[in-house]
Amino acid sequence: MAVFVASGAALVVFALGYALRPLWQARPLLGGGLGLALASATVALYLLVGTPNAFNPQQQREPETLAEAVSQLEAELERDPNQIEGWRLLASAYTAEGLSAKARDAYARAVKLAPDNPDLLAEAAEARALATRDRRFDADAVAMLKHAIEKQPMHQRARWFLGIAQRQAEQPAEAARTWEPLLSVVDAGTAHSLLEQINGARQEAGLEPLPPPAPIAAADASGGLKIKVELSAAMKAKLPANASVFVIARQVAGPPMPVAVEKHAAGKFPLEVVLDDGDSPMPTMKLSQLEQVQVLARVSASGNAIPQPGDLASQPVSVRTDSKDQVVVIIDRVVE
Image (cartoon, rainbow, N blue to C red):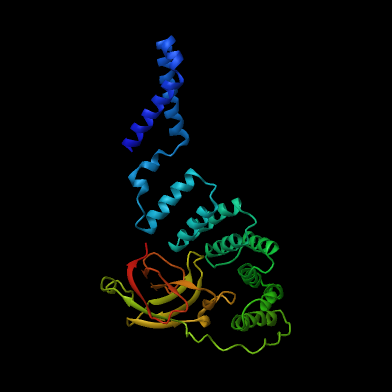
């Protein structure tokens, strides 16, 4: 930074000296005073609107942990709060840390900047639900989902979440009507599980069930993702009694909602599982629809699927969904 400051100062002196040369020769005192004033004004203006911290090595250092990355992103958004993707990324980071209320608020900031983005509206609505104790979609979340569908009528996640919200509100007929259009756009395997949800809602509403779809194609020959979960030596002493282990596949750089998940007793390690389309918690998003996912494992003492401080977790591992190799994840850290 010292070199930059010296070079900048020399450049300012040279430029002002050249521009003020006639005045300098005619009236040295006035020319010198004016030059000093303009140089001071230049420095003040840079400190006001420039980014001198950009030359701070601490600012340039790559973050080593998620907490450091979040801190740097918070500082950047405080400097320039009009960054839609910045708020979206911060919300995802908050969700990964289990800070659901902060994630909800960060998504709200992003929605204010892009109120007509269907993907963002669906993510923000989901975040509002995750921030409540009973995971319910409130009136604001429902409004977001309806607006997303207005902008993109066949937005799958928005329709799926809106149907959930309507069933939560004891409106099963409305939920079935919201979900039914998706049957024409999802694959056969997804349509089968979606139809089960639709007919469950229709039964609650006293309506006749819809007929089954055409025969479902054979399952993907890839057999799903083969995953081996190991527990590091340092974590063995921290393993809670009667805990559960969640093995999760989620979108890369996407929302934290799993596209496939299995829950097992956290007993004997290593644990070997296979994640496939049958493990998807959302009928509208299947593992086989993605080219690449992140795989991770988490031990929960409470058995809650939502990350909690004190859980044991692995680092996520990126893998192609058509991989035939076994993926190894190692539970080696405590969730803060």
